[in-house]
Length: 92
Image 1: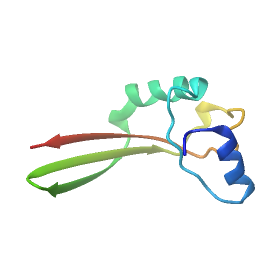
Image 2: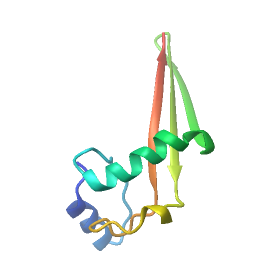
Image 3: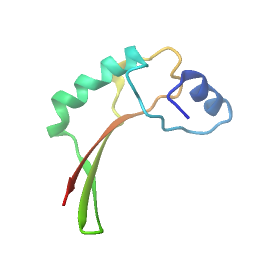
Image 4: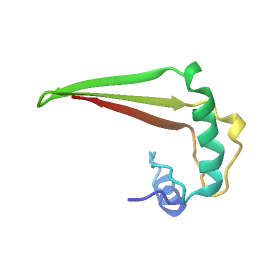
């Protein structure tokens, strides 16, 4: 589906919520969010899942930040309420 402002706007207009992957093509928002997670992840609570399948254990973690007042209002991202990132590791 992509990470596009017009898609987010359509979802908000339909009175729904959205989760979109943030990528480098959304330069301003990405540049503001990336250092936050790179520098401060130790202080954030993570949700971690572990799965075992075919002799492999996969650990995935997710960080979600809802206190994003520091981020400011981003044009075109109406309804933005949180940002998050994931991490993962495969062990064979």
